[in-house]
Image (cartoon, rainbow, N blue to C red; front, side):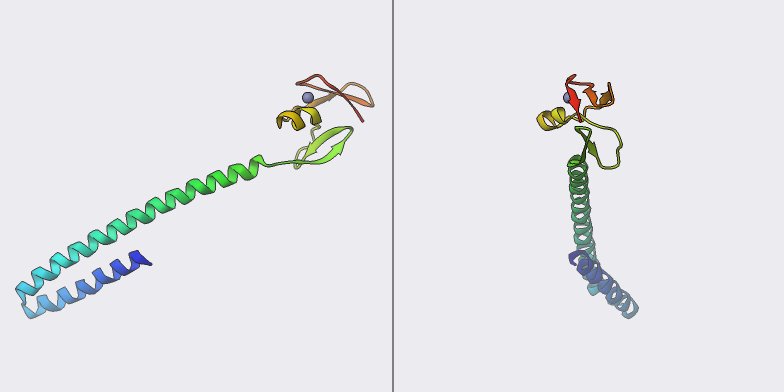
Length: 124
Ligand SMILES: [Zn+2]
């Protein structure tokens, strides 16, 4: 992983800095400090890129979830009406087939229902 590499490089440089400081090597110390700053900048840029990637994956995940939720199909035909998963209500097949609209129906007699949206009578 790219960001782990930059981070590991920075940690390694830090170890070398400690050794140089112990030896009193001033010029080499300054050069390593500059290098360390560059590595930390690179690590931060890589972390920013990962952050953007995460945000984009989260957005994609939301879109996929919405698509999955919107793809429900009738699971049963009952009394001439459609029934959907997890829902006991009976819906108008005409409204669903023509407009993908879930329109509830109302019972008007033992064998007939009517759509609340298009007013079509539906018989069993
Ligand atoms: Zn209808």
